[in-house]
Length: 229
Image (tube, rainbow, N blue to C red; front, side, top):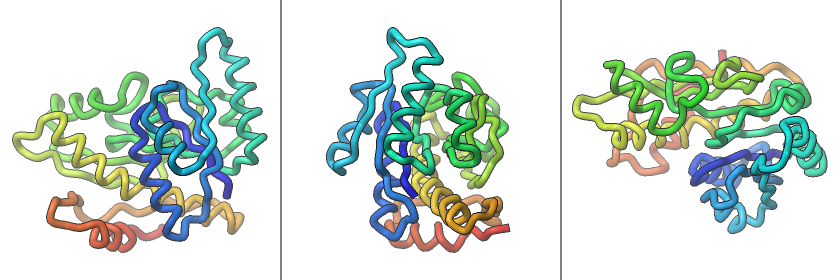
């Protein structure tokens, strides 16, 4: 599958997807789309030799932006789209052109703590203020509204006593880096087989990666913790 990744920030989830490509992924990233020229994801793309397209929205109507986005995606022969910290709403015409082929990762257990303005530290701040004892990561399909598409996978993450926004964000981000590439692989496998992707069942227990686990152990846990339902 030819993939496009959309990003607005540092691109750590973009990097997690790129790293997975080196381990037998069923997609190859052909394009990075950013809405901020200075996004950290740009440097990651340049290092990997991936073309970058900047769409700032300045001096363009929404329809013009949508047309440009579609043109760029079609030129790159894109099959699937992965949003990795992309803060803009995907135009309805783009959603319609890629039905069931656009994924997003969100740092909470949707439908809780989602919607317009709920991204980054704002999500974790809301979780802490709510008194929730469990948060997590959701991977969902993208539709015409923020964070309302069908959920493909979720992974619960504990909120620990004494957590601040930074500590919680770091814990959740590590799980994002595990779950998102797995969900992307699951989607691409289903598309290649011509079937609808089944939901990925969550682990039986809350999972929290700890500093004493190295990457190989985390990868093993990642692959073994989920099953298709």
